[in-house]
Image 1 (tube, one colour):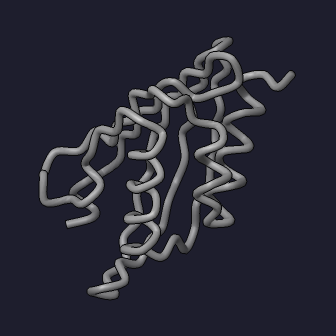
Image 2 (cartoon, one colour):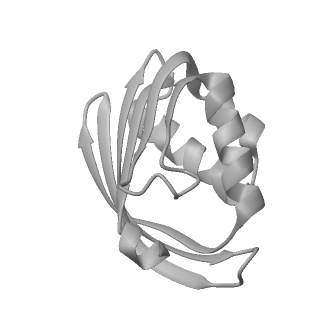
Length: 127
């Protein structure tokens, strides 16, 4: 039986491959999935409540951005809660603008499924 850290690593592996279905297999049917960002102009400043909404969010994100570098750097294991500090470099496909940011992800995993995911990053770097 996978533990929370294994689930998080599986999600990151699927995300790196662009495998939205692979991510969705690890997300609970009912979820609190939030990108905590200021401006509503950011297409992914969002809250998802279902696995299907998470899938739509990820497909929109991957359609809008080319992920040049996605690097989880530090993991904090607190049982069913995993905190990850990382770095991302992205090119916005429409404008060809490149940006980079450090980020923090906070996962809650129950019964081998993600029930909560929060992301914090530098929204000013995007603008």
